[in-house]
Image 1: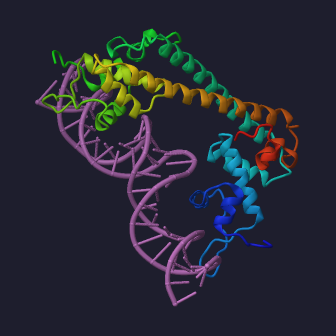
Image 2: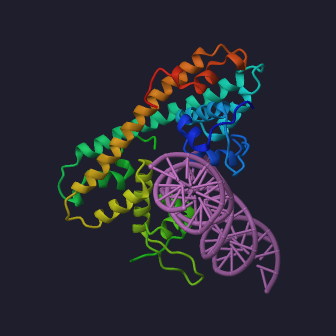
Length: 142
Length: 142
DNA sequence: CTAATTCCTATAGCGACTATAGGAGCAAGC
DNA sequence: GCTTGCTCCTATAGTCGCTATAGGAATTAG
């Protein structure tokens, strides 16, 4: 706790996390409640910026706050094995791969639907027909 | 309005939409409030099952309820041009394609992170290092 | 000294449900 | 007729990860 020099707006700009989101993370226990100025304003240090950057980056990579909470706790125990860190990341990767699969078959379905539409009247629109009848789908995985 | 023979549980099983979700759709105006039995229970017909199937299928394809509301309204006007139907589907396809792109670069990042981890101590874990420093990323698109 | 900006708290809203609580209706077996 | 168990009813709160709003107080720039 050397220099607590930054306002919430400054750490927001420095970390890329929006001001209300920082307060939200504090309430959720992802970051500690910082000390306050005389006027009651939050005062942050460099380490808070690093922590917020970590959170932001993990969120961009699609980790849930619960995962991030665990990852942060683990990085506070530098001598522990990183096996569990790996397992969180791997589980997350598996989820991402599944979502890619699902979206790809979805994309094909949509492309086919749009391609087959003769752009005529609604009553013969393939898009609406396909939506109305799952049988019309090429894939069954949804 | 010929036969209103089905209970909410039956249309749920027939359409694949869960019972509380059907009531939620009713409240949201996606389906009409059906007539009731003497005892106050909802009574549905075949057309409700078709409508719920349409909704479920569109949801599985990732359309938002707002889009589905529009698609349903359009399919009630069979003589209109289906141009707008197309535009909703195309807009949706573009969104799906973008999400696939984002998830793919995400996957690479996660794979690299996990691969490079030597499974040692937390203090030298690549996963945590990468999360802590965006510079370490191969891609800049997030 | 004033005006603009930033900060504070508390609360509500988003989307698309899901879960819970506390009842009431209804069919089948005894 | 009665009980058991299932389904149904309503209303409300919770999920996730924020975002927006209202109504102030503090700080900063001119």
